[in-house]
Image (cartoon, rainbow, N blue to C red; front, side, top):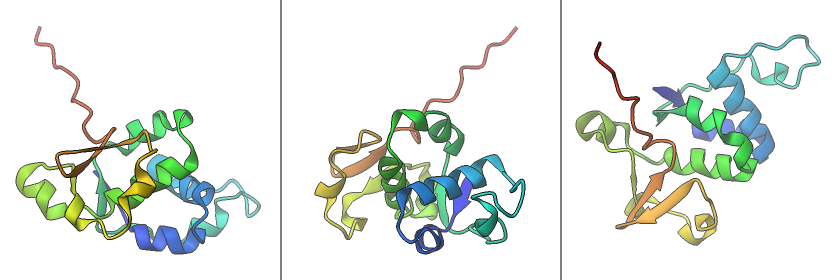
Length: 135
């Protein structure tokens, strides 16, 4: 499980989706800057851990080349609205539309998200676990 503080990421990136992606990638891969001139240097000393969560951040990052940085940032923003307690109690990874306080029409074109049955579903949060083979 990957925990992050969306508000802090958004503030430190100044709302720039490319910078949001850089911070996300830095956190998921545990990158450290190579020098003080590295683009992640200014973020490397900031603690971005928080109460928002992703179950499969590695799968999202692995497939991120298929999507724009804006789509990934929107994915992270909406995922941050999900109550962590709902996941611990029921394993729920979707987001109830009643918890979304912004116009959901802004996210309709995002291919990482699907709206169905009054809930937002996250493409890489619902990835089935690998089938275990018994020998």
